[in-house]
Length: 482
Ligand code: GLU
Image (cartoon, rainbow, N blue to C red; front, side, top):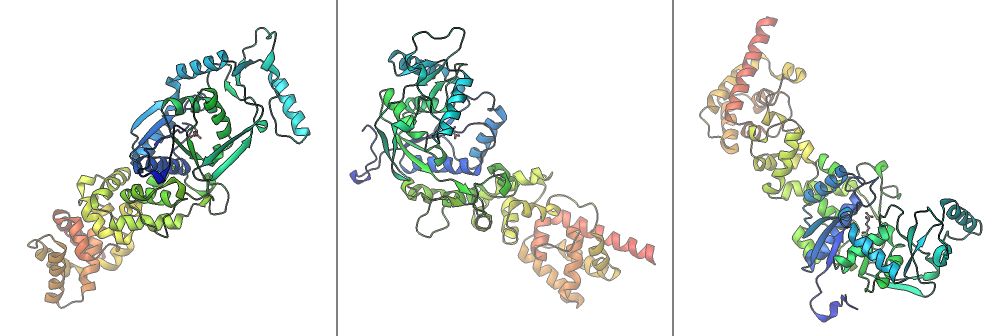
């Protein structure tokens, strides 16, 4: 064997693996998890992670989808060591491999019409058999004229294809179950099974990690490797992801694209942690940093059983990362969401300050931005209910007093808290009599973090201006009602 993963002989060999998405949609949760497992396997072994875009299906592949996949990977920070390579730019490789197989009699031209194939299919269905091509064109004396042929691989007629899947263990297929696979379409483009083998060989991939929906393709691909005179790589087929109802995860279950989860306010570190645990485990531990994942991940520890997508757990992890991640990890996400909400990150407190105060109160970055709007931009008007209740003439004196004190206060939460307390004390009123009007003055409504933190985040100039605005509002209200 040219590729051996014998862990008993000391150092595990470097894994060369690849993520090979077809660009026909977003980067889905399942694809992202496959990419993560590939990335981890490569990183854990000091190997390489290659990105290959499988865009030979010209009708279904789009440039937007390629971009969406690249964006998704970049967001999760699953950076490839090589690529992206595009199959559409590698056609010469597939053509020359087809030519070689034709030359060596390991592939042949097939002229069968759609109608004939359809009849064949129906006949086998009637007999209760799996549809198989019958090898009709293997020995054609006189090919029909004017028909553009497909190229078929001459699959061995007997014997078994056996391999040890690194997730699922030993697997064997009988060659009699496999028919002669189309490897090149009439338009000259290669089919998935062929292009994938030519590329994995050319890229010297030694471990293929992919979804187990491909498991039936694997014996066909192994036969192709052998026909091309090569050993097959090893395989690790990862089980699928189910929704909470036990059906395969789909749009029905909510957001399935990773970038949709970004838009919902999840952090990439939370997502990576969550995806890793979706089918992989290490004891009963739940929290893993990237470095820990790299240290601990082994493809053999991936579950054989399908895993269920659990939003509760993702929420829990997201909040954990919001609370514990260093501010510089959260800041880029916060900036992105502020901009998305039409706010300017530079017009308010630094991300680190905001996170320190708001993380406890929020499960997602979106929630954090929703609750932080007044720290970044002026509000249009006071919430009528809150204003009616708290911006009354009795609040004018406390607001004025606290303003006078704030002008001279150092802008730290401690000093600000002290200033509000001292004002209440001097006026001999309860904290609520000053805190609530002040909060409405600063935020436009009655919900915010503690008053010292609120002042701190609003900032000196903005806080003073907003208190003035509230005082003017109270004065006007007094004038019109009285
Ligand atoms: N393009 C295939 C897919 O997206 C890749 C399968 C493989 O990794 O071989 O399903």
